[in-house]
Length: 423
Image (cartoon, rainbow, N blue to C red; front, side, top):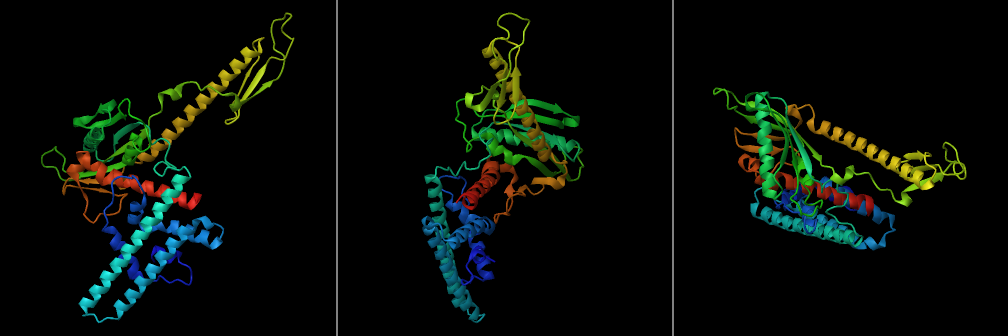
């Protein structure tokens, strides 16, 4: 069933299996763009039906509720889509009545169907252009809406061998070299290698390196290194003939890549709390060895951080100001410790997810040296076939053939989430 059929009102029939197939066939001939600027419309025209269906479902749901007159332009475009799809259904019915050997007439009908499909694509583009305008008016930047907050960060890449023995250790170095070349193509600073532990026969037990932008480059989610390299996290499988021994047979090996966002160096500084972020209680008289000033006033201080609930207490000084400063210091220190524990826990979870078991079956990408191809298993199969191995390992093809489509896929999902949950 096509997307339009799935969301059409009961009295509008879009039941044409051939329409659904022909519509998707038409879409796959369109060229996928390699940059998310300036508008998302072209990407939705290439999106699978599953990406567009929730958007249309939401619009029909709002329309049936009848309480959003400001969305009338969107409803009008949906009606246009339904009207064109009805026309396509009629054309296909007429085409089915023709004799099998009437090739010329069938060609005419197919040409007309393609023309109507182009209209649907044009309406889709218009629909998402209007959605983009609406999001801009609401102050929402499509490119960063619901973006992972770490996309603008630098990152640490950890590469370790999986299944495959010595060959897996050598594969670790090849993957690192690929990412290093990619960093050069992107204009990033040269990776700073922290650990490069060599194993047996020129293999590597682990490689850990920091990737970061050059000084002075403005950090944005669109240009952040983590926003690119996070798609490299997972199991990379390779099929090739080992260089040693000389009579080796083809072998399948794997390595795991972990990509972690680098923390801001300033995040280790003790946070400075603002007055509206905490509550203060002056609870009792200060204690001390005695004297005329000890029990004169309530000077002990208890402070609670409103957001986290962390508390600090001080009563060792006779001056209220000194006790308050000490309690604030205690709260700030505890907040920093809790933040450190949270970050360590999150990084541990991410590392465990990225590393997996190191088994070949958990692969995100396969590199086949026997036929010179690379297949990323997160992307739909390309009509042009697998990507060229040499271009990918040089770093240049890694961006255009693999990472950019994955970024666009994530980008489309963000805009869909806006329509479904915020519209």
